[in-house]
Image (cartoon, rainbow, N blue to C red; front, side, top):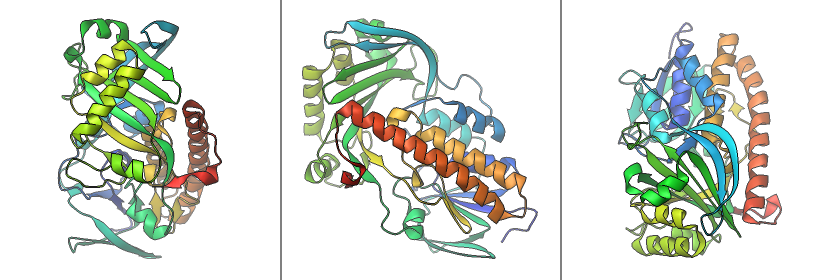
Length: 388
């Protein structure tokens, strides 16, 4: 157990939510350890991310510095028709980054030993004196606060709120990344410096550039990032899609390289029939497309005693909000500020933190559901959402 002058947080989950939490709590003097279930260094997850102010605020607070730009700027927002004609253009500059970039800049600031890989949480106990976490390795750790930053399938949430699971929305996001030089010149000229959309009946594709695999934002070393929302039925159709080339069924997504060859061919065939020529070329140039089910999740509480939930462990907003990473950053920064404002009074800090973050979480997820249902042409009540 840590001393009163150095309270200790046990953070479950080493993706972006866990790293935002670790870096911001370290900035206020907390001792933190991050426990990540994967035994390997996390890599290339999620593709592109729109860089939001909440992310920048959290990085500044934590003192996370960068040696160059965090992302790639786009100038215009354009809509294409099926024939590649630009039917709408609006000046709307913004910056797009990548999962790799945010993960890399935060991971490098953490000293060796802060992130413990290959540690899968089994269960925890908490009381007035502290929290104890038990891991599959046999390891037992004690701290003052346990933070579930372990995503939509959160082990922490499942112990706190048994039976509360994400709901499947009825559609998926196909995704891909293409190295900048690999796109044909004609397509690159049309898509250059733009955040691009094509809306069709029951589907939507968007595209923007992000840093390269080596995190470079230099011209010629960036990547084209695309996301294509398409409907997939719940039950057997979704289960089939999320079964990888080795026959393993994944819960929520298939990573790059896991898609069965037949499904990849079907994706390219659909692109040839539904997409504008420049976007067809983008999909065709993608070596390893990947896919994620679009989920909805809302929790009634984010703090229970000495245990809290952050990021997608608590609320999963649809990606149309461009808010998942920003929400995780905002949760972490608000938590650090609340703990800093109430040293030694965990209950008061968490009560105020929870009130604000619950309100923001419900607002973002409801907004995302409304946007997504309109885009996809879905007409159903919230009660009709199907569990994954």
